[in-house]
Length: 130
Image (cartoon, rainbow, N blue to C red; front, side):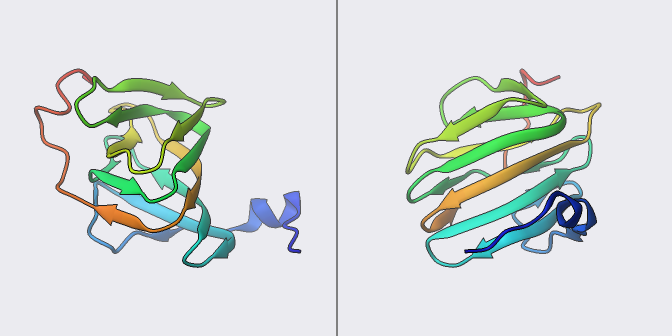
């Protein structure tokens, strides 16, 4: 068992993302655990930042803790998300998520199983977020 106290959570530092799978400035703060089965981390998106299209083998839970942004499943319209919202991305669903043009966004991401990355989100994909 591992416990991270509220005080420890406040002291977690964010590291700039270097995977090349994001647009804009994105930062990670690894929380408790990461292995091939589960990853738990906080992700900070600077305004106008986002993931590339991607999917999770066994799904992903997002809890938006600060700011606002967008989430979008492939073939769907982007949907607005804000602090306090919780998003479940079902296994294998190809999606992206990121901050609004005028807002920082932080979410806690709990990802299950492996992860597949795809192409960057195009301007056409973003047309309904401005």
